[in-house]
Length: 396
Ligand SMILES: *Cc1c(COP(=O)(O)O)cnc(C)c1O
Image (cartoon, rainbow, N blue to C red; front, side, top):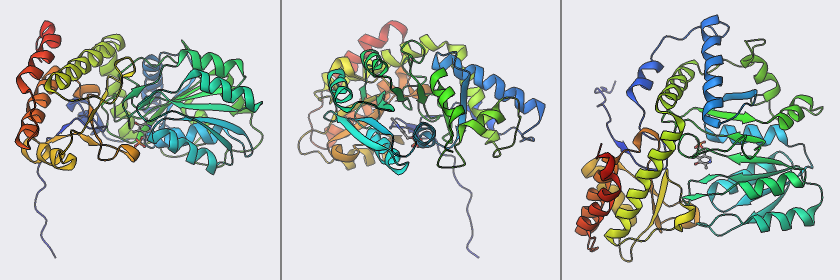
């Protein structure tokens, strides 16, 4: 038999599009022994986790819990529970994840119409309004709040008003916004919001927090046609989370321990402070990159603090830069997805990865790598510009 050597401890700096760096407290919480899924102690952890989720989602929604599975499981839960075959739905597409919503909605038999915008720009409320006016009855409108493939933060206020005026549900992908920027669940009456744990909550991947508004919850509980899959059927899953009334599937216990601890960390910091931290560090990163001589993909007012997209300068080998950062500095950043493949880098400052120390470390290493490959990066100017924004609070 081949011999297996001990695996090293990986200590990479995760500044890509997720997963982000997990706090050691969360890793420790995960190593607690499992218990029975009807154990009172576990049920009380579930109940506390729901309370904490309501806090990060900024909602009073009763139907708030975490689905077993990654962010995509949250997306599929939303679409499969809200769609019945033949329903007309509108999906907004301005990046990779909007396209994924289209794909899933079609698999559940929806008649899907698309409202699109160029990658790197937000969806225009006027376009949504025009489409809804021309269509008549529409069941739901799906939109991505934080498009991780482009770095666009989608304003939701006007779109929510339009969608509700037309009597449709508004479904929001908050995978990369939850815990990093404000998710206005109750503020803008979002009907169904789903997220993932490995982005701004800095928890391992494997759970998808969701929250469902009263009207959408009522619809789901009252469906006569069963949801097209068993595993993500919320009407049953909800009964388990409600004090363990029924067994549906074994919960990912250790991931729930992890999520509970990650949410406690959010609560200790304070959600508003957390948004501010993400905003400040991203602002410093953007200022640094621009002062260095690089161009950002997204206009200032639509930039997504947890994820910054930078254009690859002429003549620079995009993949080689990422490789050098990984090999020389154990630092991960992301490549472009879909139509932006080869054209941009994606730099994540999510959850516990969003520190001023990481901003300064990234700017100096990235700048040096670019210089060594022939791009005249103004590294000192970049560091100075970033420090000017971070300086007040000190670099930590
Ligand atoms: C990461 C991501 C997803 C998918 O999440 P997985 O955890 O990879 O399944 C969906 N939407 C957005 C906006 C994302 O960033």
